[in-house]
Length: 81
Image (cartoon, rainbow, N blue to C red; front, side, top):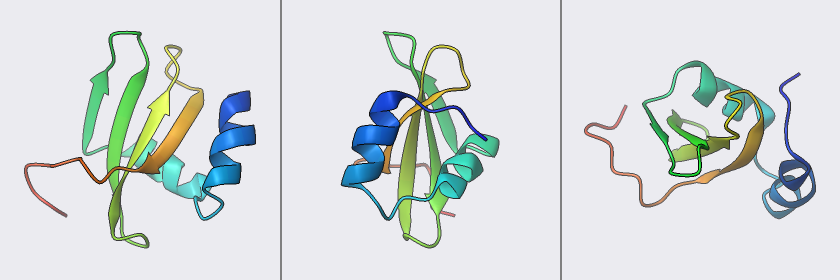
């Protein structure tokens, strides 16, 4: 099982009950784009067909713990899958 923060378990999953952990795993296994924030957290984006949206998954600096995940309306990839 993928490690998650308390924030993810108590806030993200409560606010977005439709999100599936499998979608986060899919994004992390094959991200369309990855970038490191100034604070060291790592953003990954991937297309989720079931949502017909881009999902942003934010990990802690350790590169393995999921902190946040949400459909990202503002993400503009070079091409849509």
